[in-house]
Image 1 (cartoon, one colour):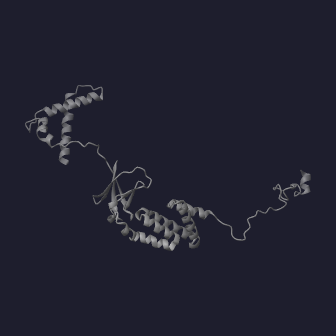
Image 2 (cartoon, helix red, strand yellow):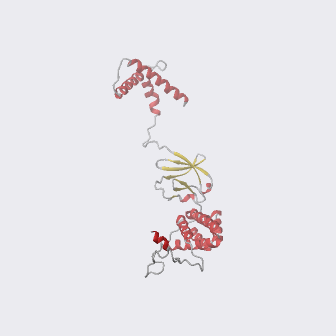
Image 3 (tube, helix red, strand yellow):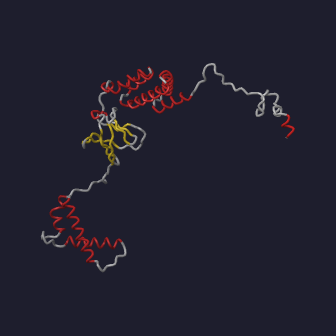
Length: 289
């Protein structure tokens, strides 16, 4: 590369010297004239006999170099952007709000992601592990290759799903039953969702206590089953809604009691007879007014 760079820079120097000398008395009035002059000088230099090779540059190119040239690519060069991501236990990496799969044997490893115009390539130590078509939707959809995942029976009994099942058993029985159903349906497809449920439940327990949080968690799961909508943001919204609903303590009266004699009240004595607002004002004040 260094040698080729020196040769190119030397040829640029030769061309600029030739152009300046040949057109030293020429006044250019447009960019087209300058380009035309440069093309004419290039042709003259290539057609001139070289002192060392004994032939012109054009003849040497036709005899030696043209046969070694390769055809230009049919498509433009696809430049890429490099990112770093960790392969999640569910065998997906998150890139621009889209999940792309990679071989499960590399879980918890730092991977290099190359984003091009049309593809997403996943590398580990310069070895390409996977290539996917690039998705532009940014809606959390999963782009998967089935060969990247272990068998379903093996995946169910791996450490991460079993740990989540154990945590849900101590949080609430309804949560444990929900996790069993989700993992029986799709282990890796619901792994992140189960982790989000556990985080939300633990936050609620730490804030409100286990007894009150258990009631809210059970009510939220019942609502999710009713509408068949199992989403972490929806679950968090249900918990927040239950948190805002404050009930009055037993025996506490919420009736509004109006004190008689308040001149600002229109009907303090009764709804049928209005209160004389001057009755509560001393007579001396009335005489002064």
